[in-house]
Image 1 (tube, rainbow, N blue to C red):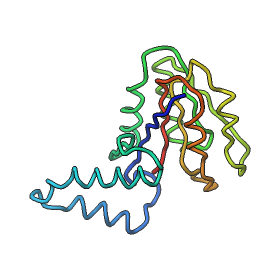
Image 2 (image 1 turned 120 degrees about the vertical axis):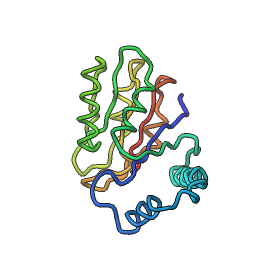
Image 3 (image 1 turned 135 degrees about the horizontal axis):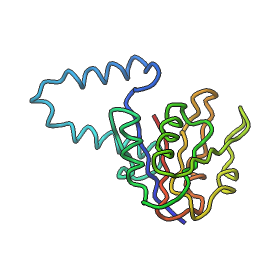
Length: 171
């Protein structure tokens, strides 16, 4: 069973961030150059905080400035072989469109794992699609429409190929 959990967080690139988030981003952007030496410490603190929240290791947390650059960086890590990407039906629409274009360019199959609207996501639906062809599992931590929390720990703990990534949209 694979135990690695790879994920990313984006930086307020969708929707309207709350005031505190927008102010924190603006404050960081306006820092004078002499204060920039602490950026790596700040990023590491954010990684540790996110890791504690998600109960994983900070080395599995990826940070970036936008969704698409992060999706591209993550998908570039996939092994070069035929396979499938499992994606949650609740994943953000722009992410699914990006994955669709990516699958068209690479010949990978995009397999949407659906569930009933308003019902809690079911790890059994993911398990039923798991096989040696799976290269990545893409799912949100919380659905954007219904606010349902995905059982990310249970889904990422499913038996899967050891090189299959779990991409958790935890923005």
